[in-house]
Length: 382
Image (cartoon, rainbow, N blue to C red; front, top):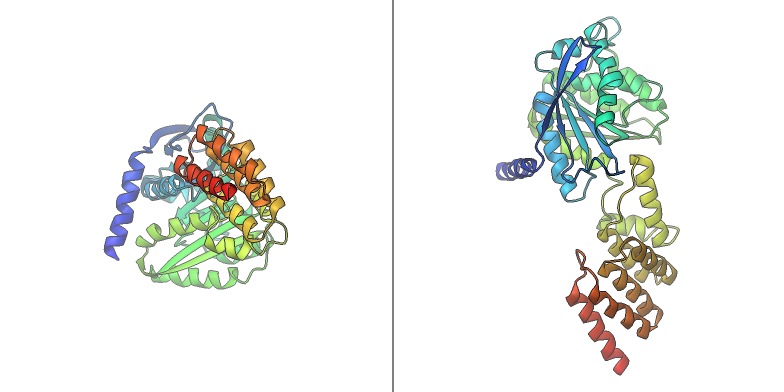
């Protein structure tokens, strides 16, 4: 197990070398001082592009930024989650003031209230003015900062859509108020919370108690996930919670896997092609940006169309692929597959041959195209 976690840490370090942090500072009127930030942009970030990226704000950025940024860079590389802009807020010298709340109300006052205003009125506008950030925002906190992120849920329209709360040190009454708020929230919201068997005892008890009430909430707008890790403590649970949280938050974004294929694609009331269209429309709706069609999903929908003998679905897929990838062998391959399934072997052969002049894709290359051509020629000759 130790070797496994060592390998994961090594991978994150190697990947993070490719995405170095940019150090910025923002002169805050609300705080009356400059505040240092760490910013990680996606590897292929283009400031001139129309594309926008989910924004991840990391409190306790002095130590929490690197594990969050490393996990995002790693998972985005494999297309499990989208590229994101990650911003860490350094708080090493101001943590107690930033996260301060009134004992009577459990809500921020004085410096804590100033920091609350700084986040919404200064930090996010600063990021949006300088980088291509989308409206889908995630906030991450640990310990006291995990408690603090909950305050942003109490706005009529929360500025964050996803919350990653790692071993929260709840202010008095906040866990109860959090449950009440999540029960009536009207915006699609992702909420992740984690503790561990060796977490600080006083925190663990309140977290487990909070989970028992939150998980009973019946609100279709809430996607809630809780982890109670074994063989982890207050600090090591961070390394295990972050990838799990990202996994849940971007579950809809993920490529179609075997489970989704069997349980959702094949059982969908409409056609496999309709499922694909809805999946990508939902991604744009939930995350605020259009996901580029990926080859993995094309293969899954083609397989489902063939399995269900849905020729219309396969034709629509082939037309979509041709539109999205006109210079790729993909366009010729799937149009050829459609004509082959239709029984028009002459047209299928023409399509496959035309693909030899196009660019190979991740899975389709010249050898595969030639194999299809030889098979069809043999079949037509007989």
